Length: 139
Image (cartoon, rainbow, N blue to C red; front, top):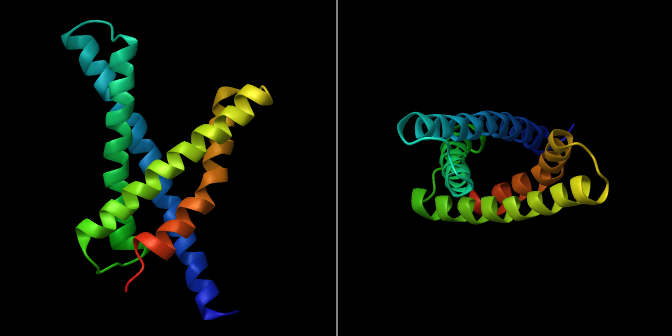
């Protein structure tokens, strides 16, 4: 097998592992924020849930960036430039995820968790390719 193909496969696996861990980070930050709000202020409103969701996304992006830079791609380029590129890819991936989720949930009436899982699987290759070829590409 081609060495570059093997390396790409290893990187894809690592990227997926980091993404899985990032999903857990996202959910923990979301739940912790809502729990703390509930304990300190009272039942969270929808606007608080939106804030918590955005905060969770941001924390997960930073987590995923650090681990992908260090473990998946072993990148050595500019930390700031690579992070900004990674963030752009993450936001684009979020948009694609929302589109895929809308298709599965809204158009095909698939359950919410299954729709989200399918959306994540659909967007995973886009995120990997864009980060490998753009965000972490050493120039």
